[in-house]
Image (tube, rainbow, N blue to C red; front, side, top):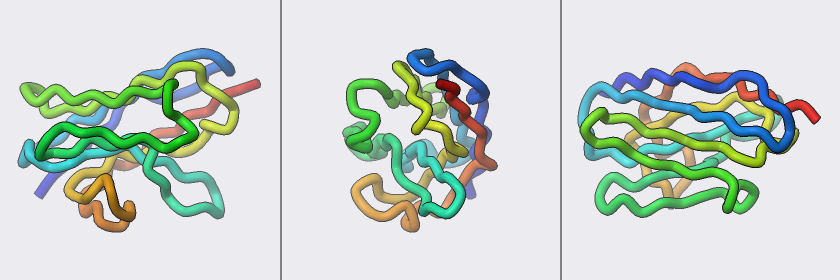
Length: 120
């Protein structure tokens, strides 16, 4: 069993930055990722980091702007979001236990979600 506790998020202006953190209790070998969802749309992967080799995957829309990193000692995954755009506005979820190369549905553990709002 894995419990995920998210922090960060909030309100930012376009061009600004925010940092999301996800602390995991439980196994440290899981792949983890940050996902986002807006009303009426499916949850999508924003950035993920594989548990076996640390490889990363980013949504095309955030490449070059967002960076995911992992602190194994603290069992924490951080998403640094720079050059934010209004279209980044969504509820962001931390997920663990799935494959970052497959559907978000493969992830079995989720945080409660945190709102990110980017104003223009």
